[in-house]
Image (tube, rainbow, N blue to C red):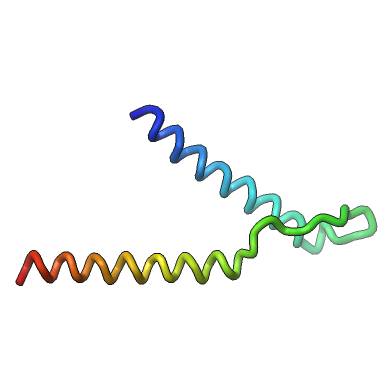
Length: 71
């Protein structure tokens, strides 16, 4: 059980660190004369679209499952 919780926390921590990195790379503060030329790690628009597809799939599966149980 500890290892499962550790893996979940590790995944959440990884996503959080990447999000913070990407927000600093693309912020207006980091784009001054002293900014490094690095790129964002994740294309967050594509990630949001894929997350919406996952949510729709889960919602559809849940509705199918509950309709089979109730009917």
